[in-house]
Image (cartoon, rainbow, N blue to C red; front, side):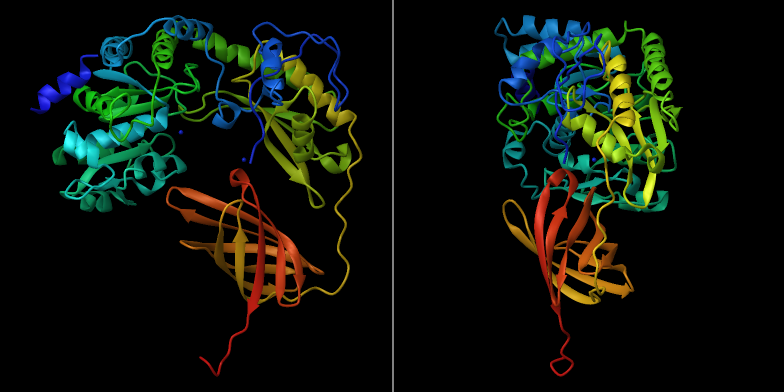
Length: 537
């Protein structure tokens, strides 16, 4: 029965404002805040197509930061673009398409099987659904109702991350062992699978090989999230014993941004496909189109013929040029930082200076380059007024297009040498407000609100304490100067660590101000001091 069902179906993973690419090369360094007239596009850049975005009010950027999804990942290879265009010109039956692509992926990668998904996270979701429901239509239709089904996923504590939401969305319970003994004790008849986040720790006592060895006697599958890695032949993670490994298509593989790659056990991957679109199952919303499927196949084919050593040499050449230019500015030094591990294997250039001498901090440089033309997205900005003046920015060449190194070098030199005057923020004057004690706070989001609790211990202008949220808590630290308060905290919520930065004003037993939560945006907050009543206690 299950086999007939299967045959019926299968006969066929700093807030930001960046996106796109803009490259203006072969021109003098533009004046900050101005667009250079008559600028021409460098070979291979997207500058000539920037009008497509500008027509809707979107300003493209030069990506000198890396393969961040918020920056639209990577530039797909020319052969990928061509494959997607060709694929768009015909209709195909989707099960037949994947049945044709899968053995080709297996042949190219040496894996038992392969499927294309709507990104790496979609691969994790579809695999989880396959492990839990198989290709049993009743179970598939009931997801995420896990009554009577295996409902626990083991994730070693070091592997918890924001992307494991793709697994948790099935409603599973996460078990977080910290030691091999805890891992062994975690197995039971409710265990569905194990998830490993590739990177530091992956070769340790709870790394892929060790965990796979423990899982094998229990018949529990292991999936590795290798989103930001390149392909290895034979596949390193499958060799270590993993059942499957998931990749992002739109990062270093340079396939379609909305595609992912899942390699591994044939039966489970065929079930993962059955649990995804176009089928009426939990993964229906995680749709991958024929264009992405054929583009991803083209990217994998290209991976085997690309000269990766030449690419790496070219990155170093670009960084050497940028270094040679920016170090002409007095007080500026640089150093190349090489990658560690398999993820994000690209060198980067750290540019450092003392802002008290140069007159501009790393954060100010980063913001200027992002706000003016041509826009450049940098990474690793550090340095803040008034007391953290040691500054830096980083340039990552991974996603820079030909000629971008010239523009980036000129623009950084320009803002370091000729920038607006920056002043230290004014220091509030007056008696230091008292904020010690317990406060009941209300956080107001763009939609909705939440009641939190803040407990402060104050020594002069220094603050420490605890921030209690709806579901978690974390230490806080900060300062109060006259009536102005500033403090930070963080809380671990599942695989994510939420960061809070509060600024505001104290007025007696009331406080209010702005809350910066990074990628989640700016909010408002207010708080009222809670006075303990000993008689009522």
